[in-house]
Amino acid sequence: MTAIDELRAALREDRWEDIDRLFNRSFFALLLTDPELVYEALDTAPDEWYRDHPRHLMTRGIGAARGPLPLVGSEAEEAFSAWVAAQPQPAARDQLGVLSARLRALMSSQRFFEAEQIADRMIAVIRGAREHAGFPDVLPTALLRIGTAKLLVGDAAAATQLFAEAHRWANIGPVHPIESLVKDHLALAAALGEDFTAARRWLEDRGRRTTLAHGLRYHYETVGLVTRALIAVGGADPQAAQAAIQDADDEGTYFSEMWWVAVHARARFELFWGDPHEGVSHIRRHLQLRGGTAAPALASKLLRADMADLFMMLGDLSAAERELNAPDGARPHPAVRLSKVRLELLRRRGDIAARLLHEAESESGVTPSLSVLRAQVERVACGAVSHRAARRAAFLLRDTGARIALLEADREVRSQLEALSDDDAVSGANSYLYRPRANLTRREAQILRALRQFGTTKEVAAALHLSPNTVKTHLNSLYRKLDVHTRDEALQHYPE
Image 1 (spheres, helix red, strand yellow):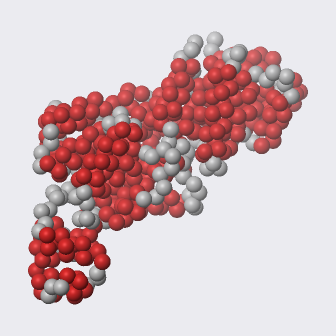
Image 2 (cartoon, helix red, strand yellow):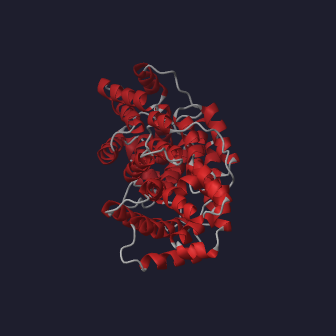
Image 3 (cartoon, one colour):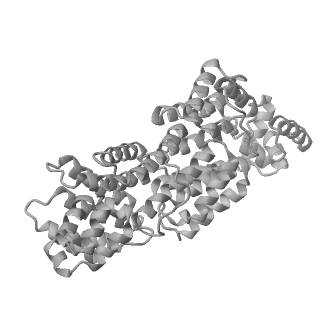
């Protein structure tokens, strides 16, 4: 007999002591499997049952939280916390229950770094527990929330470790119903780190939601939907990406805790296969929709890098620079570092791009996108890509399935890497325009510097003691070499 069958029989026969034992052993498993049956039990339980079994004050609070983002009511939380505080030696599972309710409340109110502190306290309780009663049922869910708190502040490594631990606990004894949702979180962490091969392995192929539009499972299923969109974009499959993004949109993921992943996936799609102007507008609309509330640290960094990339694709390097100059916090994100490298390449400052690339690789490791940009830096600086750089990039592309990273390069570099990685050609409707460094004469370089200081041709001429016609002649030659048409374009694409 399954736990659900046991609960149904006990409920039919009013065997509340058996229901107490079932909930102590398998409450979260039951809630994820048949939420309506659990709700029925909690709604019909006699008051004296809650009095005799105070742990179920929190159980009732969780059961009453039936919105898209389940939050325990303050009355239930206070009553349960008071009971736990009165215990001489409260059980670890009960301490986690108190902290978990606080964690959810803080995350719901966008107080992510305070939530991380609560997450650290929960980790300390788990690590210091001397008894593990209830852990196989409680820990998979608790570790999933702790890992999500870490992910939202940008600590992807800690998040991945916690999701992996949740997966291990979900497989102790009978497989916990949350196991497939834990895999979705592991897939998301892998996809955000550009390992789309690993993400595909983890992702459960359940398609669209099939559960009720509320409760714990509905909340967690969002992760699989947005991850599926991110994987399709990362694999450079625009048709699949468009369909997955539409599915995520239809299922209301933009109003979930992981809204920013859906926005990020859409921004990457518009960057390479759609309309970059629409990508910028899409990000701004969703930030405005939240009325200025703080976005998670990771979301803020990713979307800022997306905005910068979209502006670069549109040729507005000044706007891209403004996005990238915002404070990056204590944990600089690889996406922001990548965008800064590309900005310098587009501005023809290959030496600065190479330095930033080295710093990014030292801090974040070599990602597929960074390896492709390494090849592009060599092409811009030297006219060709070294065999070592090309082979390293090709290996990472083949190993991670991050085909979208190829679109960081121009067509020549892309073709070279595709041949080495033995992969089909990747194409985008939009491409970054990398220009080789121009060989300017001494006078042309002098005039370019003067353009930054003076607003008119006459002022430049007077400052350099030249005639306006001579300055115009040099400007025509300068613009031709820089492949630009205006003073502003010259200063954007060749700032030094």
